[in-house]
Image (cartoon, rainbow, N blue to C red; front, side, top):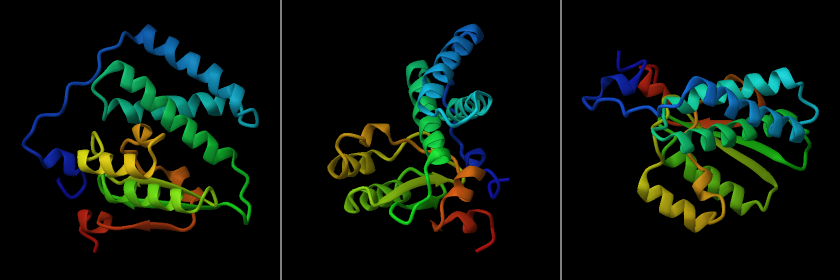
Length: 181
């Protein structure tokens, strides 16, 4: 079982998930749909809604507080919508770094690449089995590299649209976790 879901192989119980009333969740997500539909004007509202709800579903599995849940949902959905609407030009390269937990190496490499190219490259990171948080020692390094946006970084899952949109993409450790390396 641990080869498919490393999180299920640990002895520690899962973190308590945030408790939010269903109506409150719908209201918050509806507000996000309105807000992000205004910025992603070329994306149909139905698709914006789908991306926000899918981002919420992902965030709820790795977040323990209600305010953080909404923040992560918004950050992840905003990033995905930006990726969806970005015009692919020769000017801006897009690179995806993938590792298992997306809590260390891939986060740091993406930040360094993004910072060192002055916007010439859009660097993202994802994990095949994302952790709950970025490693604390990596957070301090991220703060050194990108002080303004380090707080926005959190482990994100590898999504189909992410793989499709980012060429090239680099991975390490993911195949060994699946027993294929």
